[in-house]
Length: 415
Image (cartoon, rainbow, N blue to C red; front, side):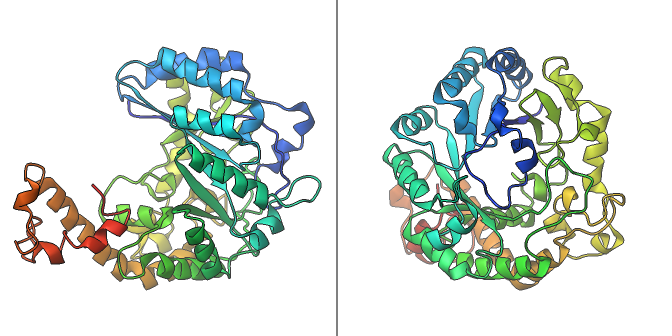
């Protein structure tokens, strides 16, 4: 079987009242504190581990609501189940997306011990973050989040930042990036703020930013990221665009040729093909009753996957379609016409008209660096002299090519 990523909507509760939450309708029943019951996971995780045994990869992510509200003992049981039922040599990868408010030393130690990738929601400095990310009493969450990021660092937890882009920060790119740089937050993901609900997938896409605003934001962000052609900060959208330029497999469903990477499991055990399609029309089954083979092979999922292949005539004739891949089907302007244009078409045209040449230059440099890595596997350090020809085959001196010490500052040019 190919690898299959599972996203669990672990709980339907949250301890924040973010103004742009796209999952707030399920959260309306928060007093019931729904979560995926441990008994359900005890039954399902063994099935999943058996399903992915041939791929040797088990990829699980935990979201909400706020997943840490389920409690640390809940997650201890999860990792115990994973370890008990994983078929060697399966590599288990867990990721959690959290607002960070409940993280303490115990949580941070747990994340470190079990190698969780922790995504922290952080919308920039306090003046931006607290405009939208407040608790139910109306108090901002910034100071608490930053204190808990320090705890994660203390325990050497791998972390990245998810920054939602809305009217509170879209015109302040320089301030955003200066803040992240000062705080040594070097792995970033940006997402435009939504004005629709995950439970209403048939409604037209609606965002709290316009396509033009988002395109100009991406242009300014690209300039901050690219600088002299040796990016220091990892920004996911530019990594994904580079993957397509280089012809690599994309790690984002948005920029892939198909949407078959994941299944989403909600608090009741119902399964959907995507986080933006949590609706009875798109329900694939329930993990209590339906096998993984049945969920993956459900005809509803086949219809879902076909959406990614339906391009408008504008997309088919667009010079950028091989790079954006039509973006996310959820963002097609008219839900009844799946070959319609995408809400963010203008955004990507603005960005790629501006950035494509430099992305291509960077892509060629990365390709050379990969050749260098491949050709130096069996070379000793003494054979890599600054004034010898670079092993990548460029004809340039090693010190001026793949041995340029400037490259060591970039996350892209690492061993």
